[in-house]
Length: 146
Image (cartoon, rainbow, N blue to C red; front, side):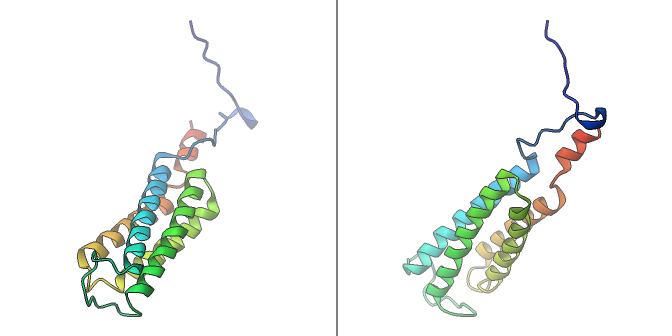
């Protein structure tokens, strides 16, 4: 027979455990990490002038190498942010919202050259921003009200 003891916090309320982020926060962290991989791979491909990109693609500002360095830097930032999000850092959350917004904006510069890829990245950025802004802390709130 198993005993059913429950831990209580201050004031007799159930204690909340902050060991694991909620499902939506984990989703946001994984999605940001995937975006980091996409940006990193595309950045390296653009820097090396790989044949992945269309020859003579129109980039609004700079050339293909400049675009590659921008993507690589954004990819590294997003990877660091993803680690912070999965660790539950509030700072990583808000920096993530800012960098994801910057990433979406940066992909608007090449939407004429790579429309499907750019729109896909922008949609994934918006989805990650939504997950970070709306669902952060709902898991803790639900357990606190039980």
